[in-house]
Length: 221
Image (cartoon, rainbow, N blue to C red):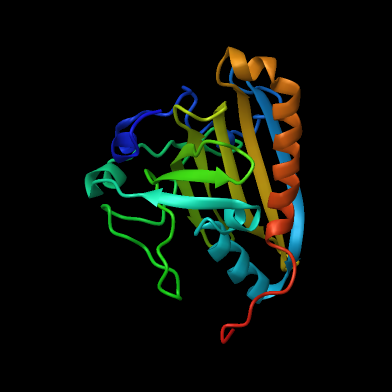
């Protein structure tokens, strides 16, 4: 695998960067990729909303699902210059994407922790998988009632594709987690192991769905 010290220089392993934002992803995924979308209600109210989006934008979903997350440092100009794809509304009008960082400045949560930015690179490690899994944040959503991010795969990942984790607050004050993805095995070995790969993907999707539910930790805990 690419040396971790230089991993920030490596491009993602697929072409359709940002396609998890497409309204018609399930009907028209990138050619050769399998799409997926799951929606789950994680609770109600302002406290649940704040907890859910802060966890989402600080790798909390992944950590609560059994991954260790190691964020890698990269030059500030990488984040500042990261390509953020333009989304379109249902009428085909471009929608300016909102991101949690401006000009490479770090953005922080109320507790002082650093939030995810476009261009961030991370290594995910699961105890039963021998290698660390490299990913790159390709966009961040930071809207009043919709926050989240997507990461794309890097060389060394068993799949190629993109996965998005977005928290939404609806008019009835319910809070939902939306997971959208498109993927395919990264090489012939993982194509041969595709049934097992599908099972693991389903297991982790279920874990992601449970990551934001349950008691909210006390601020004084």
